[in-house]
Amino acid sequence: MAEAATPMPRRAGERRWLAAILFPALSVALFLAAWEVLVSALGVPLWLLPKPSDFLARVVSDFALIAGHALATSRTLLLGFLLGVAIAVPLSLAIVSVRALERGLFPVIVFLNIMPKTIIGPIIIVWFGIGPLVSVIIVFLMCFFPVLVDSMSGFRAVDPRLYYLTRSMGASPLQTFRYVRVPASMRYIFAGMKIGLVKAVEGVIIAEFIASSAGIGYLIMQASSFMDMTLMFSGLVVTAVIALVFNALLLGTERLLMPWANAER
Amino acid sequence: MSKAESGPQSKQARGASITGRGVTKVFGSGPGAHHALGPIDLAVAEGEFVSLIGPSGCGKSTAMLLVAGLEPVTEGSIEVDGKALTAPITEVGIVFQDHLLLEFRTAIDNVMLQQQIRRLDKRQLRARADELFGKLGLTGAERRYPWQLSGGMRQRVSIARALVHEPSMLLMDEPFGALDAITRTQIRHDLEMLWLETRKTVLFITHSIEEAVGLSDRVLVMSNGPGTIVDEIAIELPRPRPAHLGDYPEFAHYAQRIYSTFEKLGVYRFK
Image 1 (cartoon, each protein chain N blue to C red):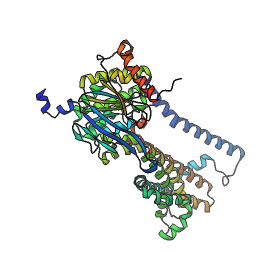
Image 2 (cartoon, rainbow over the protein chains, first blue to last red):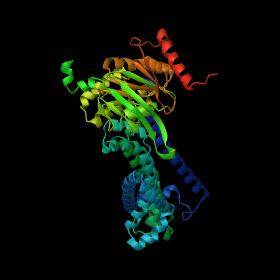
Image 3 (tube, rainbow over the protein chains, first blue to last red):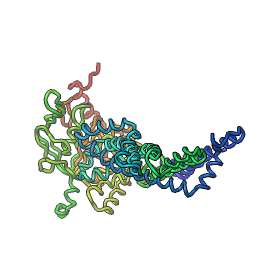
Image 4 (spheres, rainbow over the protein chains, first blue to last red):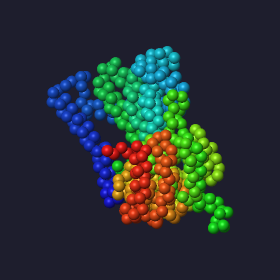
C-alpha cells in the first residue's frame, strides 16, 4: 500500500490534465474542422449554415458588441446562481432539521419545481418589467431546486453514530456542525451546484430571449430578426464559453474548499 | 503517586470505575416497545479490563451506550467514579465496529478532532498523537485519507482517536469485528500493550471468545436478548498474552466454560 501510493500522484495528475483539457479540445477542433470542410465542399449558403471560420471571425470582428452582451449575461448568471445557492443551502439545513418544514414546506417546493420555470417568465415581466431582474429570478429558480435537494441529502448523509462520538467529546451543536456536518455535506452541495449551473445557463439565455435588453440571449434574438445566421452562431459559441468558464470557476472553488476530494484515489 | 494524584493529570492517568445497578433499557413504549437489555448489575474497577461477551442482539452494544451516558437508562442507575450519570461522559474514548473516521480528514486530522472539539493544547496533543501512531504502527500514514488505508489501519486510527486525549475510560464495541483473523490477533496484542502502559478502565464488547479471554481481566457472559449477565469469569493468565492462546491450558478451560454457558442458554444448537 505504502509503496504503491507514493509515486502515483504526479503521473496521475498529468494524465488527468490530458484527459480534462487536451483531449476534449482536440476532439472539438476536429469536429469544427470537419464542419468547415463539409460546408465548403457542399457549398451550403451562409444564411443556412455558416462555417466555423465565419462565426469565429465574427466573434473577433464584433468583439466589443459580443463581449458587452456576454458580460451582461455573466452578471445575471452569477447573481442568480449565488442567490440560489445562498438561499437553497441554509433552507435545506432548515428542512432537514425541522420536521414540520419537511412535512409542510418541502412538498410545496417539489410542486413548484415540477412546473417549468421559464413559463413563469411572462408573469415575472408583469411584476418586475423587462430588465435584468427577470433573468436573475429565472436563473435563481432554475438552479435553486437541484442545490436544495442535493444539500438535503448531504446534511442527512452523516452516520448518526458520529453524533455519539462528538457528544462524547463534549462538542457543542455548533462544533458538530462546523467540524462534521458542513464538510460531510460539501460533496453533495457541489454536486447540486454543478447540475444547477447547467440549468442556470439554459435559464439565463431563455430569460434573455423573452425579457431583456442586453445579454447573449437578447443578441441572438436580435440577430434572428435580421436573419444574421453568423451572429447567432457566434452567440451560441460564446454561451458555451461562458458555461465553461463558470464550470471551471466552480471546479476551482471545489478544489480549494475540498482538498480531500482532490487526493489521489 | 500521592503527588500525582493532586495534579489535573492524575484523574486521567488513573482509570475510572463503573458501577451499574439494575440497569435496564427498553426502546420505545407500548406494544412496540423493545426490551433490549437487563436488568444487569455491573462493577468495573479502576484500571480494569472487562469484556462483555454475548450473542447478537443481547444488548451488549446498548450496555456500552448506557455506560457512556449516550442513551438514558430506562430503569436502574449507572455511576462513573461514584457520580450518577446524567449526561454523556466526556472523560472517555469510544471505538465502534466501523471505524467512523471522517472521510474528509486525514488520519492525523481525524485524531486531532479531539483536540479541536475539546480545545486542548495543540502541540501537546499532536505529540501524543504521534506517539500513539508510532505505537500503533501508523507512522507514515498521517497524511492519508481513510479510504487510502487498509481496514486494520483505519481501526488503529480510530483507537488513536479514542486515546489521544488520555481519557480515564475506553469503551469499545466489537472494534475488531470487521477485521480478518490475522489483523485481529495483531491489533489485539497492540491494544493490550497500550493498555498495560496506561491502565485505563476498558469495557470491551465482543462476540469473540478469543478476544474476550485474550484481553480481559474479567469476562462477563451475557444471555440472549434482553441480555442479563449469566456468568463472570476472572481470567488469570499472565500478560502480555501470546498470539496463540491455546498455549495456556487455562484458555481451553475458560473457552469451554463460555461455550457450555452458551449451549445451556440455547445460543448454540448443535445436534
